Amino acid sequence: MPVEFVTDYLAIGGVLFAIGAAGFLARRNLITMFLCVELMLQGVALSLVAFSATWRNYHGQAFALFTVAVAAAEAGVALALVLLLFRQRRSLDVLWWQELREPGLPLAKVPEQEPVDEEPTEPQWPKLPPAGLEPVRKRETVDVG
Image (cartoon, rainbow, N blue to C red; front, top):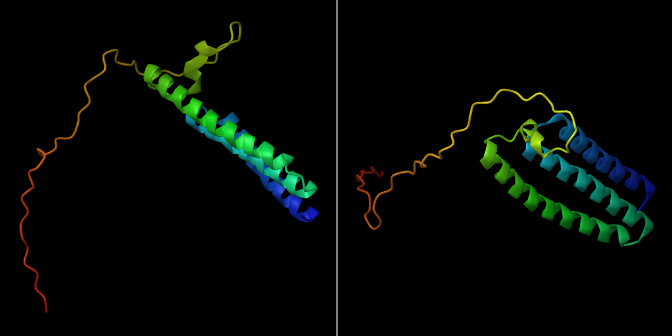
């Protein structure tokens, strides 16, 4: 692979990593933050594959494969964590999770939020017709010709 193509791939990988880092630092939503981490991992994987193709060595591609596998496992753990945290506070704002910090760190100012109902309400499911009954349809006449 010529050197000029490698610099293009490295530039794209660097841009992906920079966009992910900026998004991670600028957002407070947990899902957006995890997606930005995934974007940074993909930028690193692209750079590893570019270096691997340059040196004609498969170590970078194998390491990129492990990076993708770790990213998939991290996505599963992140989804479980986000669902658990959302059930408790009904918010995905990172500022509401300051109790998970190390002791002794200063707390950030938390915005006001409506209190969460302690008793879960019964979900309102749509009313469906009984099984086996076909809904009544009106026949329309179609004028052919």
